[in-house]
Amino acid sequence: MIHARALTRTFKVKKETVQAVRGLDLDVEAGQLVAFLGPNGAGKSTTLRILTTLLPPTSGTATVAGYDVTADPAGVRSRIGYVGQRGSAGEGFRARDELVTQGRCYGLTARDAAARADELLDLLDLTPLAGRTPGTLSGGQRRRLDIALGLVHRPDLLFLDEPSTGLDPKSRAEIWRHILRLREAYGTTLFLTTHYLEEADDMAERVVIVDNGRVIADGTPARLKSDLAGDRITLTTTTPEEARRAAAALGGLAEGTAESTAEGRAESTAESTVEGTTVHLRVADAAATLPACLRALDAKLIEVVTAETARPTLDDVFLTLTGRSLAHDDVPA
Image 1 (cartoon, one colour):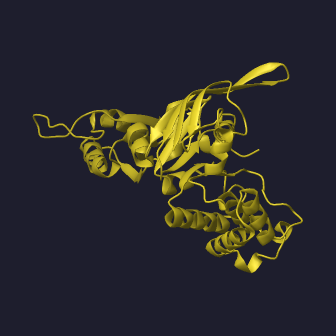
Image 2 (image 1 turned 135 degrees about the horizontal axis):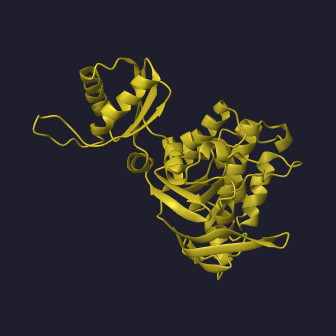
């Protein structure tokens, strides 16, 4: 569905050359729901603009829905939908009229455009709002209208650039409910950017993380978290000295698959850090490792005040890869 090879885009800002996409290789198969993540300036929006023919690459090739973005941009546009960060609908036009006009622009007959508009209004729960202008709609309602405009011509592939940015939690949940309904109804391939990491974690089948214009991680959310971040165990002790003793004692406990020793205990290595009276451990399976941790500390007469386990997040993955937090860095401008 998307095939991009050594895709590069440079542009000038105040006489300085900025390289937004430095050689991005990417393949997306039909039917996938892919979340494209990265901090501000990583090249996400630039990549989407290249793939949607809004910005030409300076080098490399990209084939989208079977068409080359440079050689046949019209072919690409006929097969894709694009919902940008800014609203698509005109402020002075009624919602249904906007959809009908969009359909006519894509070559639909007046009758087919009207039927398609009514179909999308119904699917996105916008029928009661068909006669209203965008300025009278809520943020979530306007975003649903934007998505409807991107789907009028029944595209095989829909690009969504920050589809839920700026919406309250309830509206975000509604947007995602409709996005998943659309995918189920039409089998559309979805390629989206978001700075809400929990959305990508919960909804996407595949996550691609880009930084400095290059892909630095690519896989299912579960695999990325397991391979690159790991579970976390947090223990608190009575004193900083006890915390340091605990970290030293836990240095031989299993991270992941246990290996039997002569005494029958499970031993390996685990990453640990100490902050005051708190010990943080990064392990492959926190639930399986925690009992062994507590037994080891009890044998050393180290009192544990509290013990907690936590599954990794995609931000933990980004922190592991780059040393900085994606959640804190990628705040919309």
